[in-house]
View 1: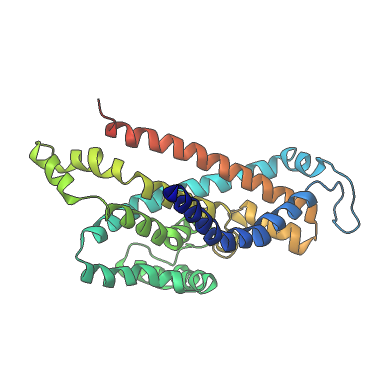
View 2 (view 1 turned 45 degrees about the vertical axis):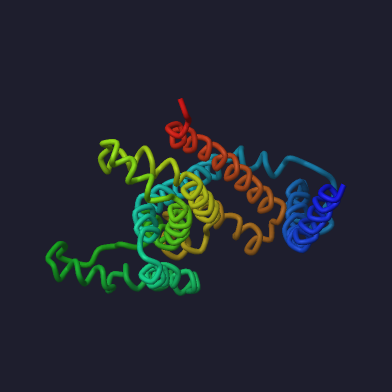
Length: 292
């Protein structure tokens, strides 16, 4: 009886600890999201005095090839950014995890500092670097690689590069936190069983790092697919993303129903793709962990 009572009291304490966070999510996330979802079903082009339910906003989106192409381009941007962050961030995260704590702290500071800067400051910094009279063009001309300054801004490549730079720390931190939990003895055991470094990396390190990889990819995909400041300032009219369209509909044309519908379409596509991506990645990465 005493153990059951203590377990019950422990459960109540956990629920009390969770209550403030759950209440905050309910008030500032769930309820506002529900209101926006309701607005997306208004039939007209305004939410003022609107009544009834209609799928007109969703039909308008899926019936326009421009919106569908922009949605596909947005997803493509997000996937490319995820892949770039994974390729660049995994080695750095693994290296940081294997450094002594004193050295790791200094290097972690360099990883975290970019996150403390305002997004607008970071983007304008890239505008200065990639401009026709910017540092990159000056170096290219000085090295003789090009004869005159090139147009490095307002294209898709510039958007991808800047988004990778912005979100790379999230992948590094996610991978580092997981790799720190992997006992180096496992790598030594793999080597003692005549596995080379590449096989140890593919069969031991990568599968055990799956939680960190998936966490980093999830964070980066959600942020990349909803980005609108960077594509607007760095990509210009050549780099269209759904986030920019939502911004225009709500703040420029005041068409809240259509903007809300686009927001929930983007949300549904993002969650669906992340679920599929997680499933596609976790199966091959964890296949080697099953005991046969």
